[in-house]
Image (cartoon, rainbow over all chains, first blue to last red; front, top):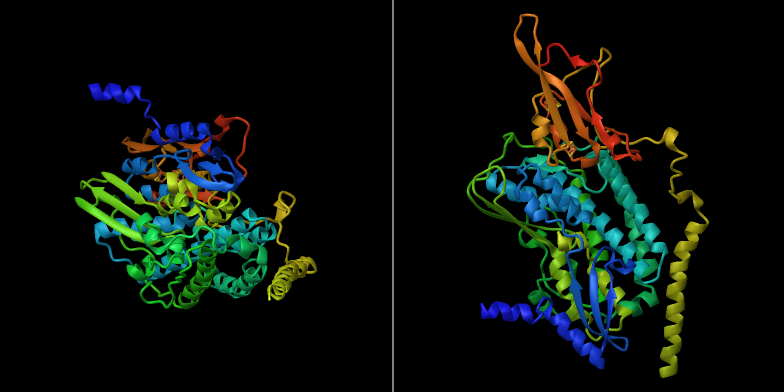
Length: 388
Length: 158
Ligand code: SF4
Ligand code: SF4
């Protein structure tokens, strides 16, 4: 009882903020708010930044502006229905989110997936990854003051969206994966259009390099900025391009291969510098690797069913199931606890954005406020993925 | 030494900028590669892929007959309670009572175009349409009745 009153009286609702504000009032720094509505945060992220002069002393992200309690919603949806909601987490790799979920359900049901469906899934995943990296590339260059790349990136991304639209029916939140395979077979034009795209895209990546990678202003603004050491990357749980730029081998496609990833040749891109430029390079090189995967698979889609036979109502046996996939931003973990019913008892998503954001404070301490754009840009944050 | 480095830096910087300008410049003289669409001026010949999910519609044939038996499989499959099936009892010529569809209520404002209802329908009575210009001034106008007035179940569909 005494303790409760003490807590109530001592105003501990936001202890750190309250204390820091007091400290800052004493002249130890300037607190500014970036967001929740700010063009550079690409979503409703609220950063409370403590500055000393122009140097960042501390960053405190405030979350929850786009929290839709997706995990809780999933508990009241059946195993077929909950998949479409997860497109709304990381909407740029909606397809890969769905993939993680169906993998987990299939693990519970112990379903064998037809080879054709496996290859289609991987092809779609890699197209999504390219589309996501393209959007990141354009948006990041725009944050750093280069406007043209944005249009070029969207031009190529549009081609992918058109391919998706033709086969899946939607452009962004394609609910194309179903437990047991994919919703419908690929469109007759799919292979031809993907091949056309790949041919066009190979020359475009070189163009991207000319335009941004080699640009001296860009290099000066990113090299040595926001350095994340290997140890820190591991302890913050950074995955995806952020982790790999710091030298952590964390590509799920290599470590725990799913579907046909163990049968295709591609390199896991690892840089060691850990700065913003390294993160940039990892993503640009990943574009080429994704192209490589697609090139190997596009002519080798096996014949057969695109969906395994499943019951109309899916019931997972009692137990706990976990699956992981590599999204465009890092490792997505899906954890389902089942009580044996038609809906999950509990679902937990381990989203890559959340862990990557947690390293932001550590990375940007001591940097200038202008560098924050480069750091945030190369972290590639998708806010609905962080809040869920 | 310092001066030499400085000059070479400047030279490198300028050349990297020129390289970028070359790319943009090459597009400037090739306006054919511009891909902007002049929507809505191109509405007449704009074509969306046949799988595009715009809204759920019920398929009616020329006799104003549909294939919906009122089994509510789509209602159960929908994650957002977008669909409400209201059934009635028809009397067959033999005098037996038979369940049939009365109204297929569809809340377009709740629909997420996930296609699960279309997949669930055992008689393929519904499909996704390619319409996409759904904005209206009054929310109530998004509430739709999908079976056309006077339509009935096609003979032979169980
Ligand atoms: S498309 Fe999805 S949300 Fe819309 S009515 Fe069908 S099942 Fe419901
Ligand atoms: S549309 Fe299909 S699933 Fe829905 S009630 Fe009619 S027959 Fe059943």
